[in-house]
Image (cartoon, rainbow over all chains, first blue to last red; front, top):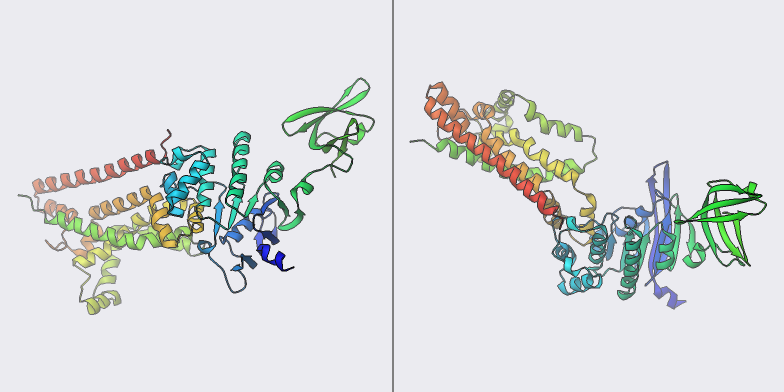
Length: 292
Length: 226
């Protein structure tokens, strides 16, 4: 028992009234993390994901309790300002200081040239050190911002949809980089994201927030996969067309960026265009069913 | 030989007014830019008043407010032994009020257009509010700051009505360049009026040109695409 208590590093239990887009709601989150965890936070936009991150960073006030490594960041009596919390925060728009070049952006956080050089070299952007943010591409800005967030050697790294503005290739590359940094610097990370593949690839824990409350909690490997016991694979897609070919019906399903044709045996009338379905493989046949 | 005393007075006045307004203006403009208070429109209106008010109206009220018969005038006289009407210190007070919007408005719009996440990024990096102000906020509104300083300076040099009402036209004490030109014309000394006016025109042109030139250069530096 004692050992698990010691391993328990981050304890977050916060409440805050939010004035949402549609109606007021209450954000209620209870999260426990161990050192080295990578938590993905997903959910619809406006569900309170970013607010949760900002509360943890101390950029917004809330009721409740946040304890990190035995140090109280937030409770009834105490509110540790963002300056004193050992966090790295990656903003959605990167928030690089336009008046400083890449190197200066890093050194502003922590005047440690050796660390700055190491981080930039690890991200393969050391040659950009004298450039100003305005002359960098999205992917480059993103890397600089990640390096800057790591300059303080944070106990907790907070990422707000870090890869949403990048093309798939760059996203893939930076996901690998983040994964590498996470291990190399022994980080504990919380990342807001929409992408299931990102969660699957990077996170070992995930929560889904809906209207301010946690509706799903668990291991991404179990929570994300749709396969039922006997299915070999299961893909989620949307029916974009149902056409009649001779005597059978064929559904055209969009799965990610690909279109596939699937023969609907006799249940053609059950499906409609625009419906979300799961395409799976059972024994030797391709199977299609509605998404629950 | 041209007597440069009025010009020196004008520059001295503009210098003091700009420094004082810079010190008051940065926190006040920051407050206006970040407050959600209901009195914000009221404060903005009062700030902008000197732009639309006839200088004579402002000058008249200031004359009344700063005279020895008013509490403000008496307070300054009794505490610091300073008379605020028909004196140089009085000109500074009056000019600060007259040029107030020219300092506040560019600063406020600079603060308002600044990306708030930059400030938050600085806080998260462990930097205090003061350090954030000097290393992140001010450098990133540099062009607004420059505009505010130069326009305030130039506007103070160019003011006439308020200075005449509050300062009178005492040579060597309150007779600034713009007032001196008026006096020359009244005395039909067109030659001196011409020389003074031409100098003012050249100074004004140069000042504005420097502002626009530097702002354009700054813009290029930060947007340099390799």
